[in-house]
Amino acid sequence: MSSPWIDIVADEDATGRLRTIYDRIRSPAGQIDRVMSIHSLRPHSLEGHMALYKNVLHHSANTLPKWYLEAIGVFVSLLNGCAYCAEHHFAGMRELLKDDSRAVEIRAAFEQRSPENAFHTAQLAGLRYAQALTLAPAQMSEALIADMRVEGLDDGQILEINQVTAYFAYANRTVLGLGVTHEGEQLGLAPSDTGDPDNWGHQ
Image (cartoon, rainbow, N blue to C red; front, side):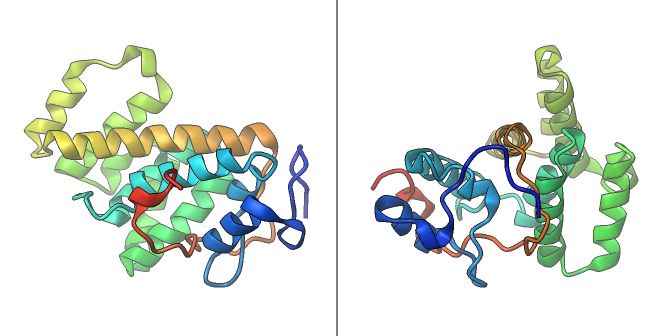
């Protein structure tokens, strides 16, 4: 297993505030995902990442399907060349879909940068927006927002798509910039904390 490019505090060595956070975010199988443990030298940064992740992807006030938000994350991660996030969130999307053939169809469309091969109408408009925002953020225009509205997305749902796209830009660059790999990790295991995401970042 390759090591990240900076030191991390191992699970067995964590104390104090970091110990509390680790115990809160470990998966049901006991794993601390490396995308989180990479923050271990600055526990406040880990808390900030976790708060963003929970509120953007897992908040009960979101109205778009969770599998679709995960799909956006997979697409953005593939566009950014981030295998760690793409593989983890593809596994999560697949589990939420409970339809392996559909998951494979989506993955193939994303690999070809052709979401229209697997999506239509509102979901396709959202993915096209995510693609444009990922690849050419300085060239964004209000027309893409209008396209999503025409397809039936309301402004709150457009915000959800924007925030998931922006979160994965952050997560991808955290992982790619610090040499984090998914080698040897169990994929698709979300952190086990089930409390209100509103509580993250306010302890």
